[in-house]
Length: 164
Image (cartoon, rainbow, N blue to C red; front, side):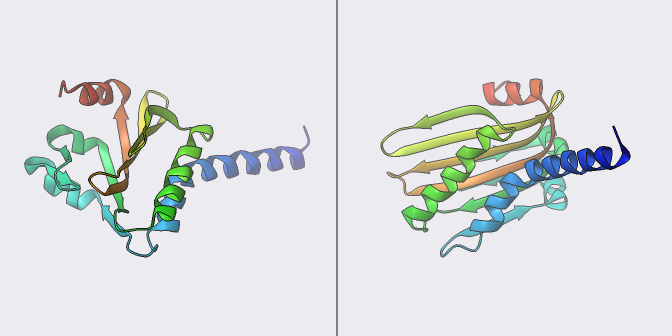
């Protein structure tokens, strides 16, 4: 392989890795300025403060506390409940399309009045990102939440099963 082909191959690999890492971030960047959308970023300093007391997100429906914080570097939340149905569907469709781009489906439920989608992206034995989309017409809830960090797959499984 010539030096030129090697350099082009390396650029292509880096571009693919960069694109994959930014896929879910693109959704947040695109829709956080949508009319009536509410965007929240919980960075490492807030997570460190919440390590002892726990952290409630979205009216207490997601609660994290204790050791799990040491593995999470950031949490993003996009509250879409006051957005148009068109925006809510567009966010779901973007998140759902990530299944073909290096994300694994942990949960996918689509019913008449609700949708739930939980995706994860792994590097080796660690989950580096979890993306959660939820829509419930009855409660008028709609949100996209992203957790980034490095969580061992075994720890995530225990957390999901409630053995933490």
